[in-house]
Image (cartoon, rainbow, N blue to C red):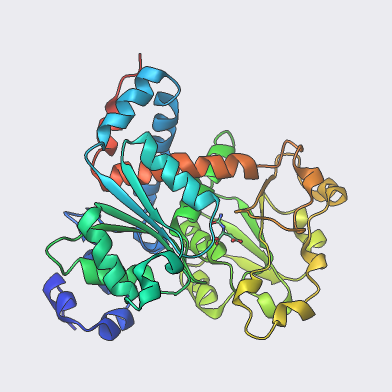
Length: 360
Ligand code: NCD
């Protein structure tokens, strides 16, 4: 079949568009070869990741001085962002808000459908279209898988296409969390040859955790990364991810034994049980305590293994670990602000200006 053009894609109904393989429609979310919308981890290449890491570190350095911060805040002072977060969020919301402040964007927010006209029966699609009247960028978190994509599908066909960033779409994807996770891995392994050749262990609710799904996609860009997925039987990684791993020849094992595998890991990525997605209280019958990382287990880790968590945590990550030098999760959450600023800057085409800026 001939390659689909943007015009072909624009003519499609939503169902046809949604059913089209991702690789055939990625260009719909680009402009002049650059990211226009950020919806999926599959939109990132290794050169783009590396550029984002460099931009994030540059922003972080420039922001240290008042002069530098003042300059950053001029860069997008003519732009407005809408934060539409109708699923609970602390870090993603605050780090995006802070990222917008760093770059001078003006921010508006809606955090619940109970305070928007959706309560009066307005459709989510009309709500998004309304945001586009007032904003240049919509950053959204939604419980419905595919809704961020649908928003981009709608807006990119209008005369006022507005950029969309997906801050979490149901159980499906959380691409910007994966960016901050990769940035954290890259910084942590900077004196050890980077992310290539590392073993990353992901633990917990791998079935419904969107962060592990997006992170797995990004790890594909690094050589010889091995994955260990540790989960209860019912919460094992989904088949689409296993197909992806096999297709990309990424070695992986699955296990339900946390302690046995700790010694192999260069990074241990803990996650909480995602029981908000339970249909029938099924989480209640799972013994999640076997997937809790306790302080006494740290003796099994290599001395330079890093411990990560997208947060929020419950009991799966012992608070007594917080002061261990291998605990990286508090830095990880702060890294989110810098990489999200780098992403917004790059999407608005000012990444290179930031990289060129000579800090006095
Ligand atoms: C994650 C999420 O929302 O998917 N949180 C986050 O964005 N840092 C993980 C979670 O909620 O468990």
